[in-house]
Length: 113
Image 1 (cartoon, rainbow, N blue to C red):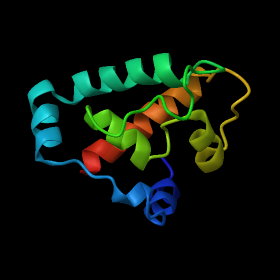
Image 2: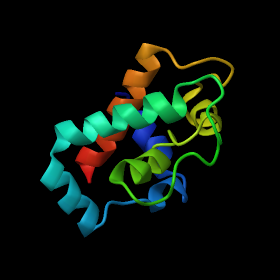
Image 3: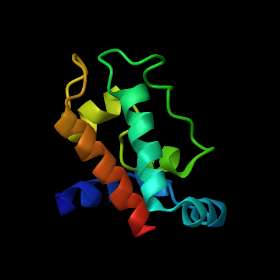
């Protein structure tokens, strides 16, 4: 994972405003990182990976699950943010390497908190 990804995200007032609160941390501790990663994969595959995701730009809530906060913090919340921040095209389904990159980025952000 290139360190500069987190450095770039940290320069954004919006992206850097997200953090895990005590409830999020408690939830993660209860489920464990393996289960959180499984949730992450499920969210990405169903909500972000298709060529034209349903409700693109609005498919990721701001609360309700720690992964949602991580998605906003890492600019992996919608296809437009993926294009702007990570140069991942909107005009096709996500490839397996891109899905794995997104999952690893989200999980690294969660681990850092």
